[in-house]
Image 1 (cartoon, chains in turn green, brown):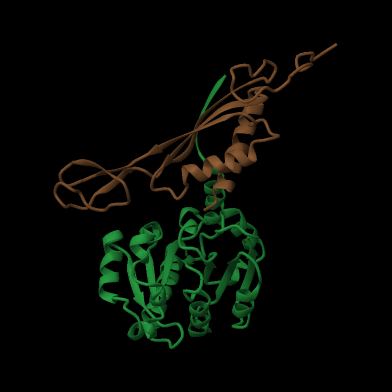
Image 2 (tube, rainbow over the protein chains, first blue to last red):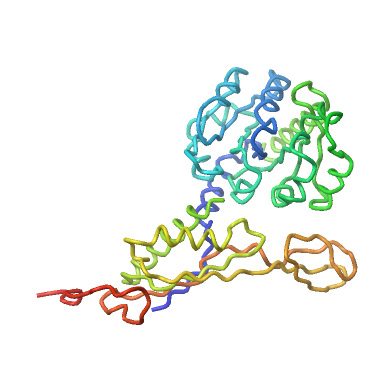
Amino acid sequence: MKVVMAQKILRANEQVARENRERLKHLPTVNLISSPGAGKTTLLERTIQALRGEVNVGVIEGDIYTTRDAERIAGQGAAVVQVNTAGLCHLDANMVGRALDQLDLAGLDLLFIENVGNLVCPAEFDLGEDYKVALLSVAEGGDKPVKYPLVFRESQAVVINKSDLLAYTDFDINKVQEEIRTINPDILIFVTSAATGEGTEGWYAWLREIVRKKRSATG
Amino acid sequence: MHEVGLIQTVMNEISRVAGANNIERVTRVRLVVGRLNGAIPDALEFAFSVLAPGTMFEGARLEIESVPVTLRCPQCGAESESEELAYFCPKCGGRAEIVSGQELYIDYFEGDDGKEDAGEGSDGPEDSAGERTGGP
């Protein structure tokens, strides 16, 4: 007997992502995606500091193992939930849904989901977020957007981090920005150093803007 | 990638539908996988071969239709195929839209109630003596 299903394999994930999105309808949510070591946690630490007293930030911290990053975020006084994927290469909507259970969503102004360090798989899983942000560090080399285009195509913004290292590498910042815009002409690009703070003002301004936007849209 | 997880999901979803259709044994599974997807057919097949034994999928054939990347240019209307993610129309240079290549779905599966012999030389000589004596 033949049974036609014509069913998306990731349907279950999409369903839970929709439920998450409904739960997050008042809370702007950013899914932060990068390779390991690009500086996601450092950028978040600095962002929480910079927005303190103005934007109440919560973080869902995805890691394969350990709670090290969550401890760093908690050290900044932000609400944080650790999700350990125990080997899985990405966060899925279910994991995020369970993490949402543990956060006081009404007390937050902005939620970050720090995905597992991986430039490939996280791009394929909707978590219920408003924005995907790709983080690319100068130390990784400028060929990454062309080699891993999906995440840059799916993202609304990209942060090129570790700009303080530009002088020590052959990373061609203009060429990389051009190549990113070839993949995604509408993407916003921020060039930052989370270590020194250089260039982070534009990033903060965008975050303030998305908080304001969602507030005025949903009341 | 996470092909093992994808195949596990495929098996769970098919098991559910198979159960509702009184299918006890799956003999064939067909997936459609666009080439823009990170899921690699070889890795999906490997995951299937590892996960199938001892389940209703044991001995089943996995077929994967790999869908090429097709682009359409909204400016000049030309359609083109590409081996990878491309962004521009090869005819006029305009920015192209992706028509296909992003698929990832279960097309169909085939199965039976598991009471007949596999018989069709599918997978090894399984001795099914006593298989059919399902009742007093």
